[in-house]
Image 1 (spheres, rainbow, N blue to C red):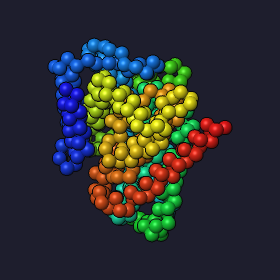
Image 2 (image 1 turned 30 degrees about the horizontal axis):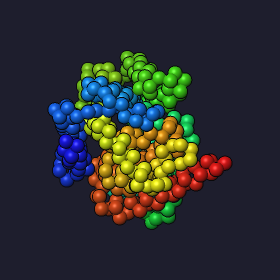
Image 3 (image 1 turned 180 degrees about the vertical axis):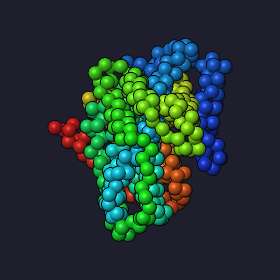
Image 4 (image 1 turned 90 degrees about the horizontal axis):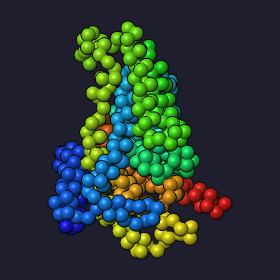
Length: 454
C-alpha cells in the first residue's frame, strides 16, 4: 500500500508542477491528492504515527487523532494567512498603497531600479513577497510606459521580493510555516538570515544596474496625477503595516500562536476601517460601483477579495505531506539520508542536514513548489528550534524560487501581470537570480561558521 501512496503523491505533485501545461489550477490536484491519500490510509487500515521530536521516535496513534492534530497545525497557518491577506485588502480598499508612489521622484532608470529593489525587499518582509510584487508592479505600470523596460524591472522585483520574504517570519509562506511550527524564532531568523538576504538582493541588482536596460531616464507622459481616492489612505497603510509587524512581538510576549496576534491586528485595522468608512468615506464610481454600494463595510469587501484558491491549495498540500509524515515515511527517509550522507552528524548531538542537501532544496524550489518541500523538511528532521539548519532552509527555499519565473508565487503573479515569457526570464534574469542565491548562501555559511567557531 505504501507504493500506492507514493504513486498518488508523485502524480499529484507532477500535476501541481505542470499546472500551466495542463491548464488546471494547482489547488485541484492538491485537494484531490490530500483526500485520496487519507482515503487509502483509512480503507487499508494502515498504522499511523505521531513524531515525537524530543525522543526522535514514532508513537502509534489513531487516524482520527492524527488527522485532527495535523488539521489544527495546518489551520494555524491558514488562519494566519487569512488575517494577513484581509489586512492587505483593507489597505488596498482605502488606496493606501498609492502612498508608496509618492516616494518615486527620480526619472533615472538606475536609481529607480535600486528604489524598486529596496521597496520590494522591505515590503515583502511585511506584507509577504506575493503581495509586495503585485503592489510594486501595479505602481511600475503607472511609472514606466515602455513594456520592454518594465519586464527588466519586474524581473528584478521578483528577486528582491523573494529575498526580502526569506528573512521575515511573515514575509513568505515557508518562513511562516517554520515560525508557526516553532522551528525558528522571529528574532533569530532575522539575525541569521537578514544579511544573506541583503546579499542575495544587492548582488544581482548591482550587476543589473550596469546593464544598458537600466541606463538613461524613463519617458514620462505629461498627464495629471490620479486623484487620491480617500484622505485616509496613508493612515491605513501605516496602521496596516504596523499591525502586521506587531504580530511577532505579540507572540514573543504572550507565547500564543501567531494567528492569535494576527486576529488582534485584524480587529484593530478593521475597527479603524469601519470608523473611517462611516466618516463620510466615499469611493463611488470605482469598479462600476454605485454610491449606495460604495458604503458597504470595507471589511466585508476586503474579505470577498482574498485569494481563497491559495488558501485551499495550502490546505491540500500541507495535509497531503502530513499523510506521508503520519505513515512515518518522512521520518524513515531522514534516517536513510543520515546513513547515506556521513556528513550529516555532528558532535553537538543534533541531526544537522548538510549544506548540500539544503542548497539542493533551494534549487529544487525553483522547479517545484517550495511549500511542500519545506513541509516535508519539517516532518523529516528533528533538529532543535533555531538550529542553523532551519535558518538555511528558510533562506534557500525563500530565495531559490527566483531562478525560474514559475519557481515562486511572486514570479507567477508577475508573469501573469506583465505576460513575461518563461524563456525570456530564463535567458535574461535567471542567471542573476542564481548569482544572488549563491552569494547569499555563501554569506550565510561564512557567517554561521564564524559564529559557531567563536
